[in-house]
Length: 139
Image (cartoon, rainbow, N blue to C red):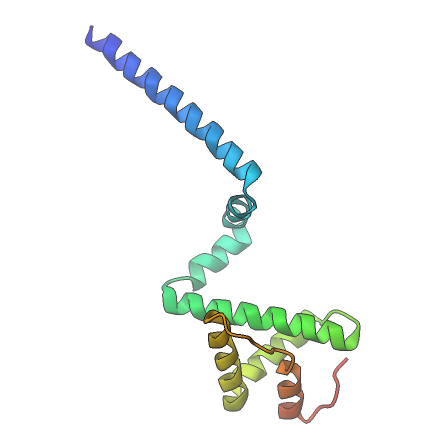
């Protein structure tokens, strides 16, 4: 009798699991956020980056700051020059901007305004870089 009861419990658990999995499939199909979350968290490159740099909330804020800066420079550069920025130039610009006290201060201020949902004008990031480098235009 006890074995029969255990089999019934297992059967119920399996049926419940099937129902939950079906619900999960529907969520992934209908909800772009959960679909994207699943996709990015199962990407080996992202997962490695995540494991290395998302250790605590302070790290997460810094990573997000760099990601927003990366995106801002990409967009602004292409708008100004009509061509995508090379990744090497982008890496150099970010490093130089963050190593300079004045530009880093502006970037932090813009980022914290962004996190507080305040209006942010990022159209000056390249100007700051160019002024720091005494370069008028890099192409």
